Length: 191
Image (cartoon, rainbow, N blue to C red; front, top):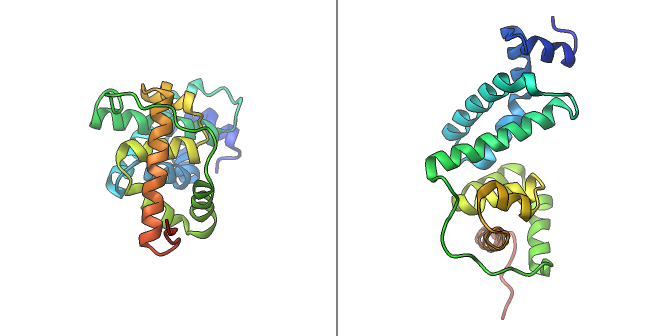
């Protein structure tokens, strides 16, 4: 039996299949969560999971131990998901007209939406709603709301402007609010 996570990592660097199986067993659930958030369905998520672990095992020698292994693996999986989306949906994300800067501060409605999404709904409900967003919105929602990247970081990752990232997030929030209204979780405000 493998002793510690450090030992598992050390053996994974030597391509030890038992150590790789142990790392997979310990983190496949968390990594599948990332894959599900970025993909449209479970089949694509399984493909991402497979591809992500291949990249983890192929690059584990570069893991320096400056963060914990789960954090490092999560970054590998997010990058794998973005590469996968680029490969299947085009080299750059959503080229075309640049969107104007959106307001910096969230409105009360957006705050209410965040509250319902992250406090009042089950993880499965949130996952289903996010998976039903158009690809360009789903990626920005994941990167900004869940993974904690800034619009500046997102713009660099996706080759879009910060304004486009903000606009896509704003549009995604509107679509999510519409979904919540349809589910009768929140009610449309009278004009």
